[in-house]
Amino acid sequence: MSELIAKERSIVIPGEALAEGMDYLPGQNTYREEEKIYSNVVGLLSLSGRAIKITPLSGPYVPKDGDKIIGRITDITMTSWRVNTGTAYSAMLNVRDATTRFVKNGEDLSKIFSIGEFIVTKITKVTSQKLIDLTMKSPDLYKVSGGRVIKINSQKVPRVIGKQGSMVSLIKNKTGCNITVGQNGFIWLKGEPKGELIAERAIKLIEQKSHQEGLTSKIETFLEEESKNN
Image 1 (tube, rainbow, N blue to C red):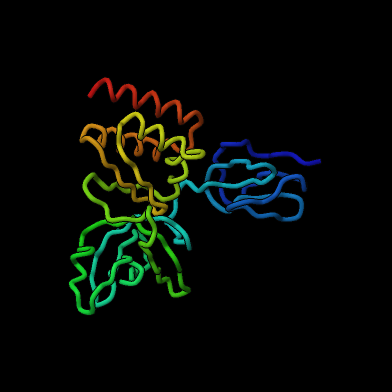
Image 2 (cartoon, helix red, strand yellow):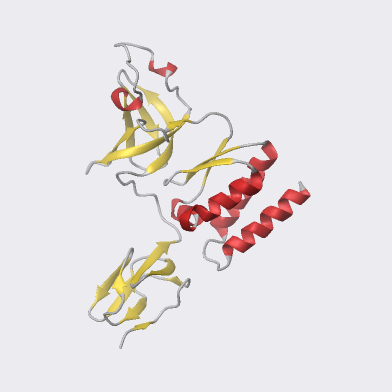
């Protein structure tokens, strides 16, 4: 007979038994030994159909092909830009992947992206030597202009986004801000100064209370109170 040993939305630790029996399947950050499924990390347990998965509560961002991230230009070479992604991985954006327009040989690349600027970009490849290749060739990839960029633990990104984007949509609607969330934990906010400040506070609150139930209702109440008081 199969049973769920740990409660859904509970915090579990590495090696903790989560379920017994073959009716449940090991998902993200879990593993099976004989009849039981165990946790690999400290995190929040959730069910997706029959699959059990754990969302880590902490830990570094691990780059993956296809991830949309926000990075900062730190260096310019003859044919590329070096980008800080907030990880130990070195990221490069080549000229051929940076723009659809023709770039002349020897052209000043700082006129396209200069040191210190943030970009919304996508990972195309992560090598075994921990090198990241980036691209800007998509309508939803662009240079950040104005607003503010904040940083949270990348493991809390799913909670900031919410199911089908529900949480981030709530913050956008209540603050009037445009919000772009990078998988690496960098988030760009752009709106009125008051709205940006409230959005940042809401996101930091989500980061702190990501393990709690009823988080959407708490954030909605927080946003309403902040809007009245500011």
